[in-house]
Length: 491
Ligand code: ADP
Ligand code: MG
Image (cartoon, rainbow, N blue to C red; front, side):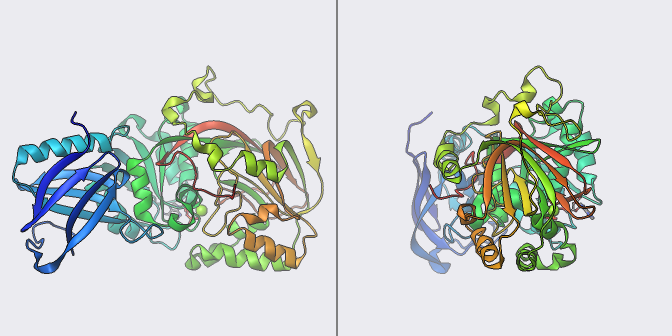
């Protein structure tokens, strides 16, 4: 292969352009073309509708594809951050003319092999669009934003609109997993919750758990998108799609949940009290979008409602300063990809065994269980830092530490503290509030002491009955460019 930089002489109308790719980025002084969205056929060919001198830098990760069209047109499809680092990326087709087609083809091949060095080019996806999710915009999000990016990147897909609850689970359970590079949902976390449970129920769960999942935000609770992309980009469809096309499979822990005679898996949160009420008691506020959670939480906190329960857990770390020191973003820098790990399902077990028993077994004190019987305002176990937009509830959550972040707002917090805590959840600072308890645990069991209320598993309704949760390391994989969640706590 040629050595860097890879240089190609091209032009845009009468304007000469040198395309320089140095392994990190593509640079050129192009025309600032105001390109029509769809076809290159009507592109302005001269400088009349363009200003000269737009110096462009396109990062490697932003390059989706390079194609040569109509003999001498070189088209570079990018999802670029041209509007600024906090704005949604945009799909652009940068069009150039080339004189020497063989030279251009060589450059195209050199650059693309580098851009897709560790990633398969032209992935094939199973896409699930939930037309009911969020404010009902998922279909439009798919058609107008997501689909054109997949096409521009040369990816293909097989699309299903979900028609009912559990449809996504049924599809995942029966999917021919060998046909796809990943399963992608356009909805909130509920559809992915179903996909994951469908995969884990299969007799070939061992093979199925190697099929990565990807999330395109189209629901009202897009915890995975926010956790992967951060507060600024969590609802940006283009950034999410870029992560699906260019990401690698990051191992992610799953929580096994036992309740009554049932057992299933959760990847976002298991909540009781205020957070569950806010999550599930706001279905009639869907029209508000993500704001429904904040509005409801403020109301609940002001009411100071408490919830009787018994909470047992196996602590690993209960000191929040130590958690900050040990589980921050910098500490997670040694990224591990799913194809490099040997996780539980790769061992000899054909099934996933809960080490701490199920909810109906007595607690084995030698495992280190601790029990609290005080009423709470809320108790939430989680595997993701963001639980929705503006709610960085569990800033120390990491994809594959094998632990659950357990957060408790005890009773008697008071309204003023309650509002301080609530404000703190926007930035994750609430975990340092002296009324909040934030822990890393291996497992927990929650037994409600009253007869009715809400328990939410990944935003889905669950019977109001005792449940036990245990983390299993790296059981699924999620497509991610960074290989870790977005920066979520001060160091
Ligand atoms: P949101 O974040 O808006 O809650 P989710 O992805 O969590 O979005 O999906 C919400 C629920 O919609 C899930 O329980 C899912 O099973 C259900 N669902 C999927 N397709 C449909 C449909 N066509 N009609 C009604 N509900 C559906
Ligand atoms: Mg949901």
